[in-house]
Length: 296
Image (cartoon, rainbow, N blue to C red):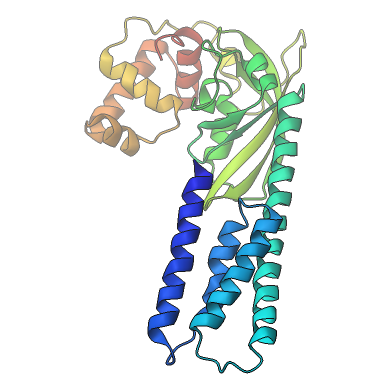
């Protein structure tokens, strides 16, 4: 599908440049523009085809160009060499990058370590088999799910707005899809892709009998709240607000998401505070994930 699409674009580009070169001579020579469809073709065509395309474009450049016919064969040879060289170089760079990406993907997929990437909004973009086995989502898929549902502390760290190139590691409490709580060690780094900051993380299970010291008061929820009240029998609005809180949205963002006023959001969160006996949003998220994971 992509090959046919790129092929039609390349052919259209060559034809357009040839027509432009023909109708603008001798005022304008646009033969050098053939290099762009050749580079595009190098993304999907084999090397010998690139050489043939370069020879054809060089012939078109000479046929419609405004230069005198003297030394035409030498000039055509230089044009063909320049076109073919540019196309072959672009193709080699693209193939090398594609090979490297395939090797990295294969390494991540076959690794026993749990690896995943998260976008700037806290949604999991990619996850290998190790991550799926460790976090055990109910439907067997991690992609497009909020990282806050499994590692709230990692979500809060990423929402902090660290720029690309930031690296850190921490120990925190993780939540599996079946409701099991485990002690996690997370090493992550942020990077820039597509104009947005993303994060890649490697997650491990400490498998300790005793819980590690929490890295923040967000991880100490279970210690601070030994007897929280259950959050069952939630209203529809409370469930919607809780879902937004799990995703790390602010009051203003929640109000825009579910089309209510910001004061209503604040009142709903306060009602949830009173219902559960917690004092912070992070504690509320943790309690909700522990007790109402299926509902959320």
